[in-house]
Length: 334
Image (tube, rainbow, N blue to C red):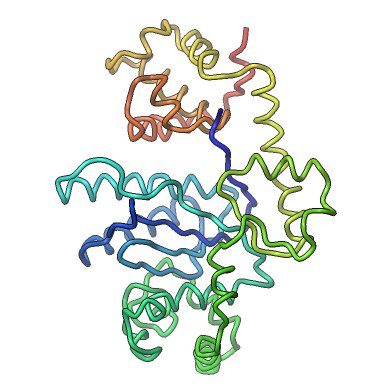
């Protein structure tokens, strides 16, 4: 079966969490954290996204990201793939660096944004990496210091977040610190970390069957909001899910896609499996990897097995194939 996709809401705010494989360290040294943040900042600019809060721990990371009309996965794939390559080269290892797919939690900005900022920025204090809130102000690996104009990252929208606490900077900082220092319940923190698949005050009983079926098509997706927010988010994302389901119902699978792509690029299905770098073969691999993952929703593992190449190679070809986004997959059929 194809890998399930993620819910994409243009302008939506996502709490993004990722961990090292088997909870191992993924940031062994300061240099590693700087490398990861540099790549992250570059991708924010590249994909016109915004970071509202962040924290790096030794074996995991938290980001609060507002996406543009470009899906979150477009930003995260080159970040995680590129950093994994850097990490393996630096430490002379091979294999996976991160554990499974990253978790993304679409949140109701009106109700939960500030609570998520507090939750994310307090991670080092909660983990005992610093002893107090005042000590956290000098800790460079969370957005809290940036809110206080220390260890600032250019891509962190700290001023935008401070403006939510007051008009004058001095007043806003004071209210922000009071907000962070306020007592929070453990249950609230667990929920903000994504404890449930969907948090909805109204439950799912009143939501139409189509919405339930739609949710089942969404992989590793969580929604933090009330019933109205959940329903609205699913309604906005219906088009992409319906398009993919339509293609699969028409019989599109990797075997058919391979045959049609090879015909389109004027090569044989056997040639696309070769290691050659000819223009036609390269174009076919890029188109196949892009359409297979982005349009049909198959996983990089499934595509890699089909072409008998590695998953990082699929990611590389998929990025090259993004220039074919205007191609209508149905036009490749006989």
